[in-house]
Image (cartoon, rainbow, N blue to C red; front, side, top):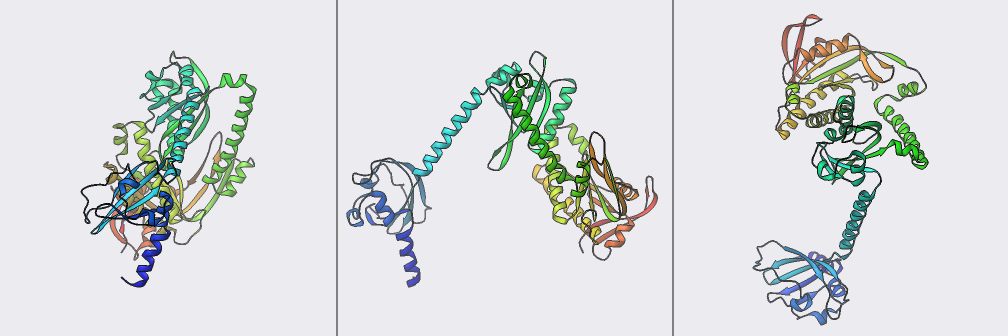
Amino acid sequence: MSDLVRRAHTALFEHTSDGVLVLDLEYRLVEANSAAQRLLGESGDALRGRPISELLPQWTPPEPLSPEDPPRDGEWVWHGTVKSPRQAHVLRVRCVPLPEGRVLLLRDLTAHAEVEAMLRQQKEYYESLVLNSPVAMVTINLRFNVVSWNPAAERLFGYTAREALGRNILRLVASEGPIRDEAESTSREALERGRIQLLTRRLRKDGTPIDVELLALPVMVEGEQVGFIAIYHDLTELRRLHEQELAHLHTIQSERERADQLLLNILPKPVADRLKHGQRIIVENFPDVTVLFADLVDFTRFAAQHSPPDVLQVLNMVFSIFDQLTDEFGVEKVKTIGDAYMAVGGLSLPRDDHAEAMARLALAMRAELLKLGDQLQIPLHLRIGLHSGPVTAGVISGKKFAYDLWGDTVNTASRMESHGVVDGIHLSETVYERLRGRYRLQDQGIVPIKGKGPMRTWLLLGAP
């Protein structure tokens, strides 16, 4: 071992924040670093030669342990020695075998344990808050089955916790008619957006309708959403209580601001500004873009065989991947239509190579969908169609607004998709002319296209 490495080992031994004890084969102390001396409350001279059973009386050496074995970890409460502080410490002990003895690494987890105790206290506080809350609070998983049901929910809806736990929330409080339709739509929106807030109507156990304000917030575990906490405010009570009414008005203002931000997320800022200033019809012409349509093959059959939450979860995963890819390739999502996806290149982000960008997007969409299908062990396949040309884009607004594209280019791209093959990327001749020489393309010959007549088309196979 070089002097540099030896000095590095010595420096690490002396200055690490963990206590280090070097033991012989009989578990007697040979050496202790400064951190260990502070922890044990004695000097190195006073510690040398003493058995570990005296210094850490509650710790049992792991046996058998040979130099070939991996380190062994343990965690326990240590109350110190005669000369060290007597307050309890939580230590993690790692025993590292050596041919001549053992090395013990001591990490003081007391602060960590105190944090855990504080978190447990906060959890108990939260559970007490939920238990005693005057507002109905219901925890549901991603299948919308009830996980928890507080006493206020019992009073509001008439079901006991025993009756509610494990049951689908829609069957409990939105079991029929328009209320059921709206609740299912709200559930889909919650899965897509993660958080919703709205005024709606639900049903009590006896069938009586009640007007409620519903706030659904995501429940996250280690960064992954596992469900929702649904908070139901009885609006009749809110109307009687002035303070709660003011809070509700504040919430409406917050939602208005959030809606403005959402508008900016789905529309170009100039279009959003014109809508906010009262303009209801916004139309612009774009002379040259590339439009993509992608459709999930036989997804209707999958949807018929699975529950709506499962179907929506899969669609959400698929479209989230597609959204990420459009951002990655510098093109734009236009909309989803059921299990179909529409995107465009060269619109708000002008670029001369929009056909090539959309070709790369199509190849990536196909590859990522097949990968997702393998992961979920379900058949997921696409038909994709591409066409380039002029479009009209804009917003037509009545009670609701939608940003959309119109024109023959859109219709032709849609026909390319519908007349394509499973896992195929079907191209018009216009797109072929822009891609040839840079991609592998397969001539499909003359294909009769509904509403267009005979057209020569190609399949995009991949990069050269």
